[in-house]
Image (cartoon, rainbow, N blue to C red):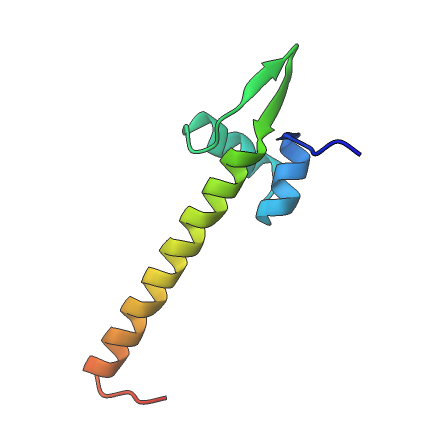
Length: 77
């Protein structure tokens, strides 16, 4: 079975946990690479993987910041 190198917007949406319209917005913003096959978009697996990594890093940094702020305010939950 060949390894998949591209996703449809619907497949990318499922993997990213977002809606298909959100995938189109990410493409329009240049945050997800794509190519056209006729009138259909195909998104490289590497682009989806990189976006997932960026989101994970941003979430981790935001959580660390929230923890820091909570500690500064004296909350120790």
